Length: 427
Image 1 (cartoon, rainbow, N blue to C red):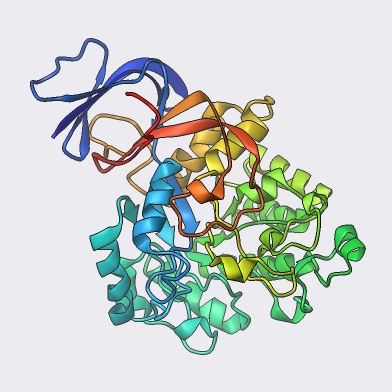
Image 2 (image 1 turned 180 degrees about the vertical axis):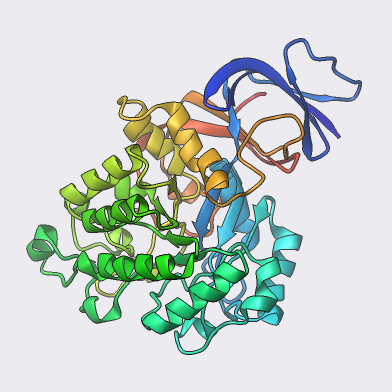
């Protein structure tokens, strides 16, 4: 199967160039102008649209096996492809939890059958993500992207210490949801001014940052690659910045919603705005933006977390934590940060792809001859409205309903195959 992307503006390294891309099977075969086009080649006329390396999302919740009423791998992978993602890493808060190879195999089988993009699952750190006994690291390691108990913080310091030592020996990262349970205090949103105004219990910032501070020292002691999920506070940014200065092997991510929103964007007691970690104060939001710009924060990840409607159409205290983001992440970030000139388009694309691959030593995220044909074509002129009823994800739980945004992924090619094509765009 041969395909040609013709007339696109292609991100090569950190610069754009008008070149064509020839795809043969699952690889990029040629890049250049006036390429010889073999017979029976499928040609896409891009007319100046952007071509970038497919996005890589190291933090998604695909809910299967165990919670297919929220989302299936088939639906989640198509939603990711619609958003321009060609690789995703599903978190292990499933049923059964992938804490043994037998449990993981159930997930791997569904991925092999149903996913339209590359999916590299996590293995759990502890059995059942309960923080009491270790998962089967050695058996899982050849088949997982990394180890995480995402959705829960590992409360026992020695358990995290020993897990990091094992992960370092296996050359696998520990990816941590950082939350000190004794400091959650029954909260459902940030412990700030807006929580007081709404009369809701708050989650203090130190709940996150104190566990990061513990873990970076454990990472230093073990030599483990330690990656922090969804940074949300200025204190967390400061801890990571200082750890990097000290030479500790720590990386981290930020989510689109923490970059574009803060606690004062929550208009009312509405469960659609409930997420973990919560939207923080304005100064936290600004610290996250600054941390992304100065390199303290390495990458962007969505934390796509679909739920059934009845789990979100509730008050903040009763609703489930989490919002969806796969289909809207790039366009929201482009609208809020690239269009106003806060960051460049190249910077955003790299934070969602090239830098992700480099952070985790993955053979993706670049457009070059011989590389996997993982590509996204983006129409930067296309404006659209966030309409949950049109999502490919089963989850419709977004607080951004009705927001008008610009930039639309119109073609996603994963491993040489079309994973998504916008039905309204002629190519």
